[in-house]
Amino acid sequence: EIYLRGSMMNQRPRRPLDWQRLEEQAAATLARGPWGYIAGGAGRGDTMRANQAAFDRWALSPRMLRDVAQRSTARTVLGTPLPAPVLLAPIGVQTLAHPDGELATARASARTGVPLVTSSASSFTFEEIAEASGDTPRWYQLYWPKDRTIATSFIRRAEAAGYSALVVTLDTWLLGWRPMDLDEGFLPFLWGEGNVNYLQDPAFRALLAAPPEEDMQAAIGQFAFQFSNPAVTWEDLAFLRETTELPIVLKGILRADDARLAAEHGVDGVIVSNHGGRQVDGAIGALAALPEVVDAVGDRLEVLFDSGIRGGSDALKALALGARAVLLGRPYMWGLATGGEDGVVDVVRSLLAELDLAMALTGHRTIDDVDRSALVATP
Ligand code: FNR
Image (tube, rainbow, N blue to C red):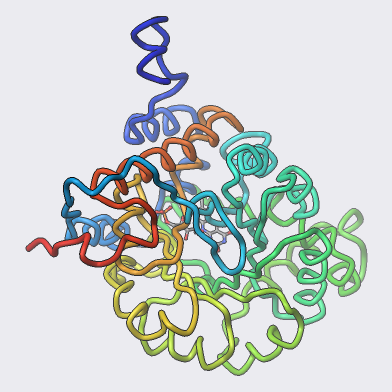
């Protein structure tokens, strides 16, 4: 369709399908603070670079003459049938990129059938986001607050709003050292956009001496106190398991022994992720950690992956290494920044198209056909 429009009607795509150029456009669109928050990483950026380098260590090894005329990227992930093993990663405060923020992303999710994992730090309430995502499945990401009554309230709200899995992020009890944000003194989810789910939550409000409308300073202080919860341990997972019947997915696992602990504690899935290199600088590239996690627990729970997916071939490499699905992060923010809902749709569609082509051109008809034999290690 794109080539036809180009040659017959002299019509180019609305925005670059080359994600490097799209990223440049997004950078040019946004002010320094928001751009630094989205693009930046922890410390010197070594983990972000390691995420990219980890993809370079594997190459796809195409097979020929395999009849790939009829094919499908469909896959069921944690009981949810999806058009492709792709979800949109939880990203907070999306109004930084576009005034419609998560509502635009949720509408794009509805149009593409690719689920959004809604962040606890979203700039609209997760009820509003649920409504905007229509009939497309949606998952909820919990930043587990200190007070369990708030955690329970968030989970009940997510259940009532039709979220079908609970993603619990483990790597952000404390915010990483992020020089780009520190230099700007910029922490968007503390002030304004990003704390709305707390400020409107009945259990949170019950803890305040005065409602946020009367004493915002105290409310923000309580929010910051609740948000940071570094004393949590594996034993606490029992509380989540007892609180909800939704599938529980632990996000931020990077080691085989932690993955085994996750399996022993009765969760349904893990996401191998280093938060896009935003938390620990000098950490292992996420893809480098994927094979050992899959080998340790792949037969007991579903292993998902994010951190560094920058195209269909990257997604295919992660799937070949045993990821049940991948989550797309920053690239959809580039679409959101440059084109709102349509921008996210374009980014998601191009990822799905490139994944389908990479699957076919390497000689696979379905995602389930893809395994480690599709890859060779490169020196
Ligand atoms: C994130 N990420 C994130 N994760 C999470 O569990 N809750 C959140 O609120 C956020 N917020 C957030 C904001 C921004 C601006 C970014 C870039 C990332 C992490 C996200 O889910 C995912 O792990 C990474 O984005 C994956 O890395 P790449 O592919 O974006 O490099």
